[in-house]
Length: 167
Ligand code: SF4
Image (cartoon, rainbow, N blue to C red; front, side):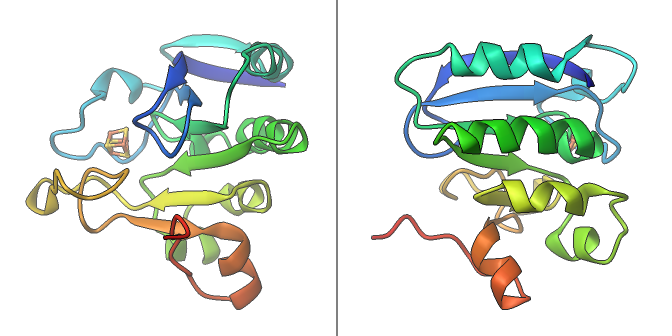
């Protein structure tokens, strides 16, 4: 399956807990003010590759705790994001994703087919980056409106349940 990417970082400790592979998807419809990655907005830019190649590259990296799907907006390519997330979870990795849509956008269909990715995620960081709510102290997110959502718990509860790191 085709996927358009902007790049990857094979060992990151700033996009979720532990050591994570961060995959940046190309294309983002949200165009947040003060976005730090505006070069990822154009869905025709970046590099077209194959989800199997991406999965192989991730699984070849040793000592990973998880994978973070970032962007761009990974949920703007829902089939590819779901395939990559599913394979990574099957390999025992935790999967986080960042999106500019809110949980409610996704559940009500305003985010197209983004809901198809949810069954394959552990944590979703939702909502656009809002400069007025920029918060340098907020864990794993840029602005305080964004939520760290425990996806399996939220799907089971039928409402967004916030993720905690167990402390
Ligand atoms: S959702 Fe993320 S990548 Fe997209 S415009 Fe907003 S901050 Fe930038």
